[in-house]
Length: 173
Image 1 (cartoon, rainbow, N blue to C red):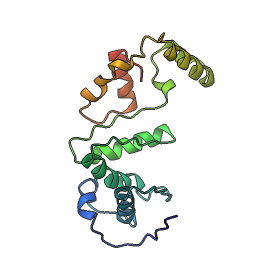
Image 2 (cartoon, rainbow, N blue to C red; image 1 turned 60 degrees about the vertical axis):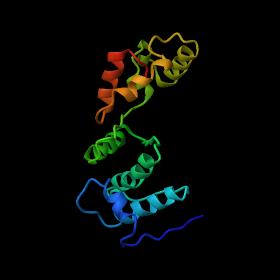
Image 3 (tube, rainbow, N blue to C red; image 1 turned 120 degrees about the vertical axis):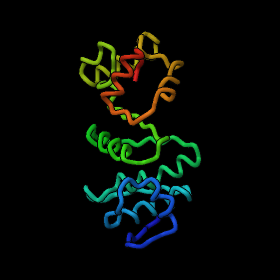
Image 4 (cartoon, rainbow, N blue to C red; image 1 turned 135 degrees about the vertical axis):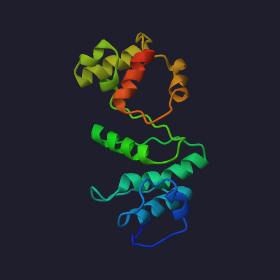
């Protein structure tokens, strides 16, 4: 198990991660977190980060992950536990000055679903959705048409905007 003691200091990675850090100054421990995450990813190591609310984890992690993802043409899935956390991540990404980062924020399938089954209780909805997709009886589920998502992204898309796009294209989220 890799144990890292976070202490203030300047590392070699700063010039790379600074390009993706959306603020003029770093909070205490933020830069070190970004350097540790960046180093772990470069070395293909797993990392678990636990830090108090308000420390600045989101912007530090994004600043360390994005250069590697972009250099290696990787896609990043940033999973959050709550809808508000999705909004927080999108807000941070929108502050990053790189013009070629086009994230789309999604909430749970039920919140974005266009089918009338979205009014069912969660557990019933999940089963009904699964059955409709497997039998290709959902008119919105068209996996072959999924390319429109990447072709039409030009900015940060928040979940409500994503739902509007799904409605416009009559497409399953």
